Image (cartoon, rainbow over all chains, first blue to last red):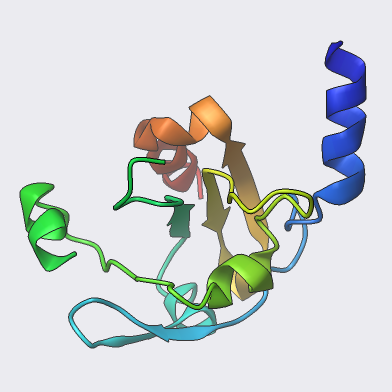
Length: 58
Length: 71
């Protein structure tokens, strides 16, 4: 049962992988400050964590 | 959201992504489902992806923090 799910994930899931170049973005945070990825990586590694539906029960 | 951030005493920026801008950009949604994955990227110089943590590995921030220490 494990193999089909791995295959399905690898075929349909195209997020950046190790060695890929992450897409650049500029976005505002909750304090209204703007952040651009290409600028932040100059100061050191950036951790970008996705927390889906952080404010829901889901 | 601000309250939530304060409750975690986090010293890094929080981003709300109601339009899914970053989700689409990084394609961290399963195409057949409406839910996004819990996923953490460590991004280095020139936006090169150094590490990717998914699912239960993404729950523990120490993995990502340790990865940063190596660069």
